[in-house]
Image (cartoon, rainbow, N blue to C red):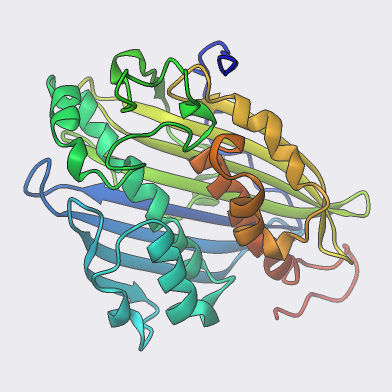
Length: 346
């Protein structure tokens, strides 16, 4: 087999969120992970989300919020869960393990929430719980050895064997050890600044300060507006957490630009920028993301899993693309052109 393509390390953050555009909608989500009893113990995941309309006059109007609190086991099982707003079938998710099982259970039990901020958060539980524990590598000198010693219990890959689960772990990649587990010694990370733009402090929902101990945050932003006869999308994504030096370190960051035909709700163009990634093979996934052009956007949650599976995709970029499935619903709440009657929120 040919060796996978190697790129320069991706180590450049996009910085804070752009200023909100007049006549746009912004969805922001965050999932914070905290380990009150230490590494290897159950941990608390807190999800927050908000949809914010910015009128052509620049005035913000909150369209919706969502949230959850999950107590997760070291094997990424849901031990306890509460969501906001509440839903009568939420208790059915207790015992579900993150990954394909959690996504299937989410669709079966809370499918009526599709398109809502809370559904987006719960869909992101799988990816956020997969990567959250990485932040301990900034705080624990022997973290790599502890991870390798416990890989038989890992829920990632095949009991810790990661060969060919994504572009970055293609067979022969520098990211892999001889036994197929992750070679953390060659893993890259980047210091990053705040996501909140100081010129637009309400551009993100409120997120508590993280400092002084290992805590992880998965943050996502999706901006939607109309221009040139199309729906325009600017999406940002970052996995990060505080470090002992008092700043923040990120292991993943992407920026995605998309254009959508509003009438047919079809993806017309797509550009994925790999900004911060842990291994030199990882940026290759961005080159394959354009395979989704021509797909109905509302079907991306499943279509991405089907078309960018295994070495064709990146687990985390795939989640960025899958989140675009909610764009058509959000776009229906966009205001009309300036001077036209105010939009009706549907």
